[in-house]
Image 1 (tube, rainbow, N blue to C red):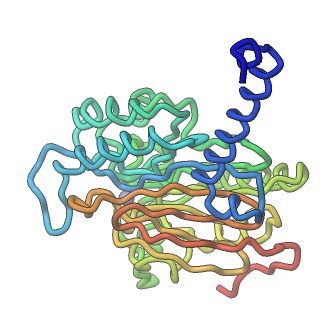
Image 2 (cartoon, rainbow, N blue to C red):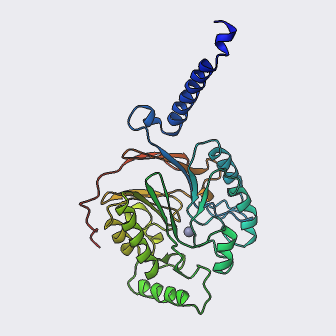
Image 3 (cartoon, protein in one colour):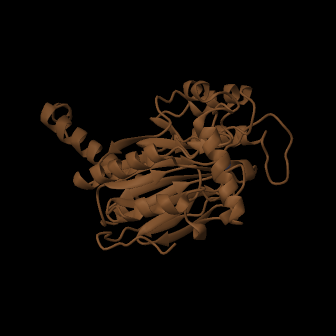
Length: 326
Ligand SMILES: [Zn+2]
């Protein structure tokens, strides 16, 4: 080929388009291996991290608080090499003490993509407003949309003894009452480290799911605490998990609920909703624990790292779903 042909603007344009095309195919295969096999070209990927629970203190039982910082550093470096729309950590980014935020948040903030927080019961060494300010959160619960998906983030410390509420506040008093009632019923989750979703947030959740449904979006809900007994050790269930389960199951938009809090993790499907309890990073000092989630076609693919198992979950139509038996 003559030099002038190589430098011909038309030829350069063809070559450039070819390179861009090949690059996008390679990125799409990297992002969604199954999309590369021709199942679906559309793909949205995001990172999930659960229970970093960092603190500068010695390990206790399986919890390696200090080592979790190195785990997060490795995780952030790895996630930054991937093509992710966002990363979300599903609560308990620290174990205790406000200064733990000052060590762990600079690491989390090194993520190169948009990043989100879910509040956890260990995240309140300070009053609620100060915790929200530290985390850069405008609201304790919120939602955002991306590529036909609605991502809904709940605050499980809405009614909680460890939600940064003043002792004489309504939310704290309601938490004391609710815990007493659960104790009287002898329920396994009647323990002080759990919490509940309040009335206003429940109404907001139902309205947000309705709106997602009307717009034809699918929804994934994130919360710190599990809501399905089969997907966790029931001792760690959200206090009013049955109410939240019914709200999710009455929506044809909701296809998954992602949480942490129960460090060994778990999974179960009920009424077309996939409940994934992600393994806690604090209990994975050697192999680490986090995941990349790929959404494409009718598939939710979890590509686990370390202690998080990989799973391919199929989304089934949810129009005929019924609330579960209590
Ligand atoms: Zn927790």
